[in-house]
Length: 123
Image (cartoon, rainbow, N blue to C red; front, side, top):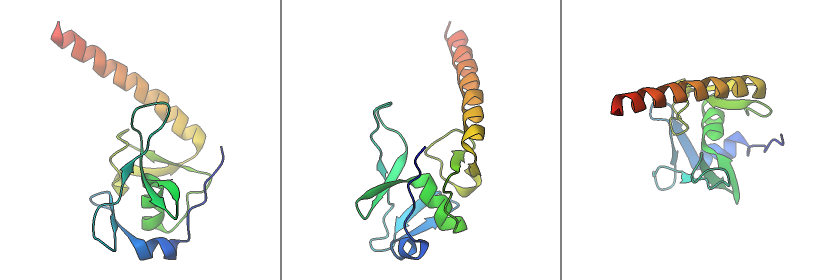
């Protein structure tokens, strides 16, 4: 998997600040929340992203970088609870691609069990 290098941390911090409790990245210039849905061919709307210097970066990777000061590089930033819109720092973890794939399989089982429970309640 090709890795998109993040811009220099000092440069990012000139434009953005991350609130770890809210899980939001704010634009330093206008104090507004910075994000836009990222259109992708697999689903209608997917991960949040931020466009910086004409390049789109995933929100959760920037949040990790702004908080820890470390580029996740070859690693994957995983949403622990499976909610891709929950970018609070306590919900993000840096894992290998293999760990992330294992976690995805577990979530599919959980979702199907929840779906079955809902269907049973409706009957």
